[in-house]
Image (cartoon, rainbow, N blue to C red):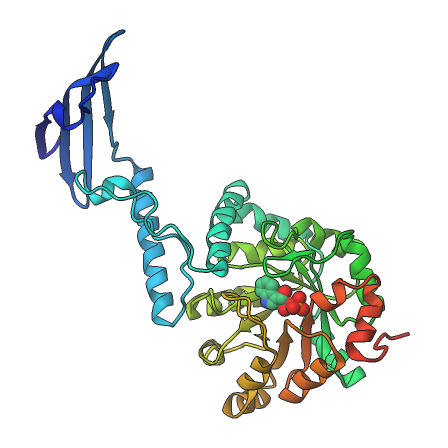
Length: 392
Ligand SMILES: O=P(O)(O)OC[C@@H](O)[C@@H](O)c1c[nH]c2ccccc12
């Protein structure tokens, strides 16, 4: 080993006062430093009532480990950039670099920093693991091949504009949502295709399909089923997107639009994902919750659709006055000048709620709970708007 430092650790340091059935009689730790890594090997002589053995282990300085360290560092830099933009959500648990990187004499508690600060952060950490596993099974190169067989994209934004012009009410994005972390199970007998068809008959301009399994009991299978059933409304893939790979995946599964959450994504990610969406023909609904996120998003070119979420995804608090607050003054003016379609999201239950957010300046609304809970979701839409908005 290069630059070998060898030291003997007295066995007393490891033994307890009561005599064990097996015990270590000698240990030797070899440390070698090859910047920026430490590698070390441990050799121990173990005696037991059954005999004796030598155990040896070494931290092989493999390419895989070096990559793990790099990956961790990149993750940390991403979180630092995000934090500098006021993003509180960390992409991964900051548990520290792979063990050998901290050096053999610094012991890090396994659990340190392992607790997410809120539900959104928990969802993002889970998604990060989920996406890396999916990516391993289906690398981008194979997804790109599948693109050739993907169904043609439909015009999500065009459908919203047309509905608004036809009804003079906000165009409806009706959400196929079985459950949520804040509300629990919303509908017992949940048939995604039946609900989607009822929404379409009821006059929805577009549909939103939850694909997150763990927290919303959704799936990509639901998205595919709805698309294949021949529902004509353009479909939004309602997912926590943290990696461009997911854009390709959504497109292949039949999405016409995707959600990009500004509370999770730094500006550069949003910019780059918007570009990929354009290449794939997907519309991007960029979601904001507060003024800071809104200003960041207004600073990015080429955004046509912005949603204001009335629900705080970190605390679950819902307040539809948020839509009004964010659209007042200069921001509302910029949106009108740029002809950006604003979407009022979450917590909308009554015709008064719809009138309120329309007055605030939205041309579309995203509604789940109030309509998915009704026995007949088609009637749910009529109740929500206070009138029949279907074509028939
Ligand atoms: O069920 P509601 O309160 O009508 O909300 C629908 C939709 O706005 C909500 O599901 C939503 C908005 N943004 C999100 C981001 C992730 C998950 C869910 C959401």
